[in-house]
Image: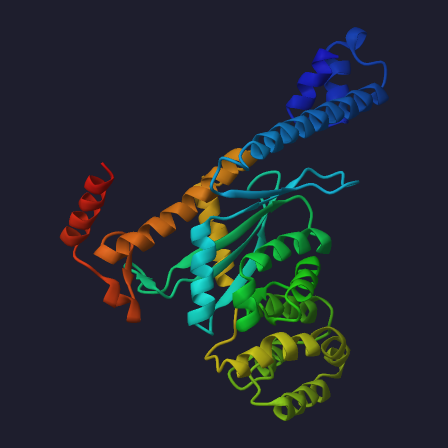
Amino acid sequence: MNRITEGLNNKKSCIEIYQDMVLKDPDNAPKDLQQVHTKKHYNKKQVSHAAKANIADEVLQILSMVNDHDFVKEVVYTQDNSKPPSIICYTSEQIADIKTHLQADPSTVLGVDRTFNLGSVFVTNFVYKNKKVISKSTRDHPIFIGPVFFHWDGSMETYHTFFSHFKARILTEVQCFDVKLGSDDEGGLTVALDSVFSKPDRLLCTKHIKDNVTDYIKNKLPLTSNQRSQIMSDIFNDNGIATADDTIDFDTKSNELCNSFPCFANYFEIRLKNRLFNYVNQPFRKYDSNRLWTNNNCESMNHRFKVALNWKPHQLPELLDKIYNVIQLHHADLKRSIVGNGNYELFGNFKKHRIQHSKWQFFFNSQIEKEV
């Protein structure tokens, strides 16, 4: 049995293990191939039980953080749910900054996306462009992180819990201002967004729609390369369906496309047209955008997380801490921009808050002396 285990640890197939043992030492080899299969199945069960035990230990550690960690705000466990509890995380600074942006900038889009391969848990988080500052290196508004959700499935019910918690924390601003939410076309996530925020201005990532259309017309339809290019151009170019001037223009261009490519018409009418109109064209016209919205900000933050983790999956407590550190750094640099330090500099009307470092240091020292 030990030699079977050794072979399994070396990633050999059951047949390879059986063959090696029979040829090298037939007297001590397994009696048949089924014995190797049985051992492999047993080993998998042991690994599975160990993994579940580790996850349980990780969640217990997180539970202990609720009352003494600034980032962990709620642990959610549902009756009859076989999954471990989900965890909702954010700081008061994050919520305050999002509220400020919702109040001051009608163009703010809160992107939301699920990230894989950070650990055994899924990570879903909000992101937005912080318009108070610009990056010294890129000269663009930096991407900031909103509330973060650690969860184990992508059901509508699971996302609903997270989004409801978040809405309750920004309730006044949600009632007074339009909330623009952007995402990929993930079923459970988008249904939960519409349910919690009562049909918000929701945008779909144009890049993902393009990828889906490209995949369909390439693999499902008898079209030439030029014909495929023409379809993509008719939908997504600067004068295409996605950027149509009004409803009439949208319908006219849609009909022209379907008449030109009848084999594409059924897919367009059933699976694409309404999504294009409601979540791409209407937001594009309503907010007078100069380009179609994509979820690139979320993708960039997903990359940032993986860099912080050195591209290796982490256990839940360490994963939570690493993401918390990324958030802390962003907000520390946001504060440092007031005196001209850090990776950001104040932008627009916020430049008036800039003060000299010496004055800031004098004020800071004075406060310390008062406390002493």
